[in-house]
Image (tube, rainbow, N blue to C red; front, side):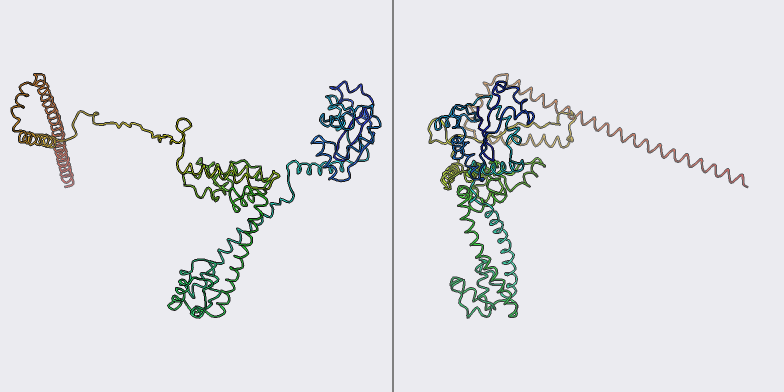
Length: 551
């Protein structure tokens, strides 16, 4: 039996010396514990080395796809065809079928062959002579990189490093431009402050300053190629009544040089933006359609590369750029951010505030698919991005119109979804029932009783005045009233009288208690005054005795 063994360095054909050992699959590894034992089982018959990495990659891709490469076909015709009666042990059953079909060789693939392949791989360095271990490892590493690029369909032409550098440079240019323009406006504002209010555009302002120079030259200078006629007339009028200070020619020269720098940087920024736009459409067209050139480039720059960005899930793409806010929210146990760099996309910007979170989540999900398609796909068109953007725009329109439709019933009808409002009954404790003693004084009680009795009399009079012609009917109804109502009225009156009596008794008790306390206070004061007078008398007597004894 012959064994076809594939390595990163080339193809090896082994001859099985003792086929009886293959029947003991479970204990076969014991026969390959040492190189001496392994050489007793198998022996190297032929080794076909690859010329370079390209040939190795072609052979490896052919094997993974189940095809016969040129180098393998050459080896099989040279070595195996001479011994056609021998069986060929291979590691892939699909490849065995192709070999049998094209070269008419009997191939074997079973569990014993798979175990034999593992054992040969464990003793490969001793069985294949002439290949140092460092060379084999270097070949394996190079072939692994090439094969992974092929499997991932990674093109070396898609260099996203240029995008990362371009977007970083664009941000730096924006910062420098802002600093230069602020310095130019402040510097020239000492000489001609009114120009900054009339001309608001920064680039037009710098061009005007470069052409005008000293404000006294405004009347004779032609600004029609820079400013409209109305603005030009306003600038000339402002120059005549300007309140700025006088400056020297040297100062004007430095200001003009600064304006030249601003204009040159602005032109270079425009050129750089066009370059970035073209590179984004070439490398990530679907992502560019979804979120725009600048946002897509910033996402790639933040992740490090397009391939690294493709490894991120949609939830990470959504909050990419808001890491500080995310960890601060997790630390303080507050709401996490809903968007990061993706907030500057046009779809999120044209949404109302309440729907920005939903749209950013949906946009991140579609953008994650677009990124993976751009990074790992073979096509370079933007059809997928256009379709997904159209779906998001339809969804956005539904959200803005509150277009929540019914699944059943009439499809055109709007869903009746009322907002849930939590209604809870809060009962407040009434402290009035804690004490039976009324808190109001007697005088106030009598005033309330009088006020309650006074409005009853005019109401009765007004009723009588209004209903004079119906007096007879009232009398008849009063005559027909049952004695039960009269009893109820009597009960009500008795209860009111009892309440008044209780309040009067309570007030009397309070008055008696207060009077008793006052009487006790008076007696205590009188007792204290008497005791003081007695003490004073005793002291006088003792003094008189002392004087008498001295005499």
